[in-house]
Image (cartoon, rainbow, N blue to C red; front, side, top):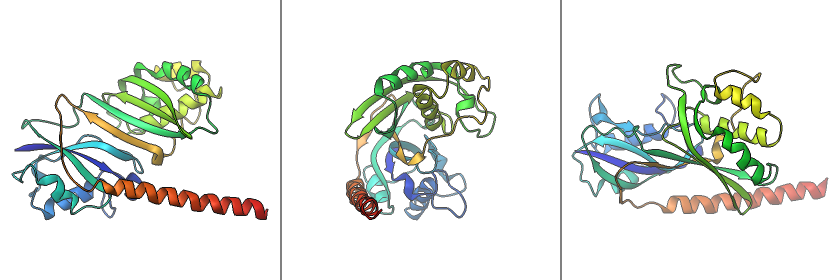
Length: 268
């Protein structure tokens, strides 16, 4: 049987998503757990496939993988969660034998920007319009093999205010390496008036109009929200308290850093 599994992970805890010798990665840890549980075996690893290989430092709420196994359907998410830390499986579905998770209907990324220091939301929304639709994003991504198709369609880019943050949601069927972080970096520069819209127009047509290219934003504030298909996942798996506890830990650390910053300000 072939299963599709939906899972979340704490990106900054790992040395990237894809397996790498000598590094603790998301995919490497999942494969380790699956081998320990006899979910997979052999060189072909039971046709294991991942939907999205996120950049180092990027977290996920809804990445997807697929694997062939006879492991009990309902028991698999909890079994994996018992062997993993910082990775939580929370959905499962039975899929056809030829299912490839890379062939998704849509992918959804979210980036958190601190509201202070970024352009007004109206200017960001106006700048975003230039990137929506079908374009050649070769100059807004990092090369992988050099053979990938860099023409794709951005379905939507939206900005909303959430407390101290501006949240940017970007949706497309597929993305390129570092595309979200470079696209958003360029979008902000356009809204700030640092990059003219004419230069972006040329770059979206494949013409290198900027020296040095576009620098990507930090990966730690990016989340792969979901990878969607034409079927639903069965809600499954415990262990979700990890992210609640991690959020509390980060809030406490923020308070500590804020106290130290204020103490230094007073002493100076």
